[in-house]
Length: 97
Image (cartoon, rainbow, N blue to C red; front, side, top):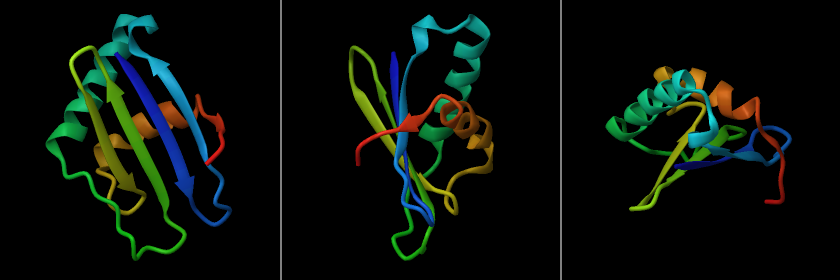
């Protein structure tokens, strides 16, 4: 399983992102990520287009069977995902928009 993460927006408009191969992580991290993905799936993926200077998060999960994409901003993101976003942003680097 692979996670493609992209963070954009905010005051500076910087776009950052990363790709995380879940199978290469320690088992404990794999389990934590799976619980975060369950939160993504159980919540409502939304972005408030009226929010100025908000940060948008795009999380795409790819596996052999399908692809799922979740969109949140820093206003609509479930609080239970804050640790997941920190995990992903710590591995992110600037990317082309």
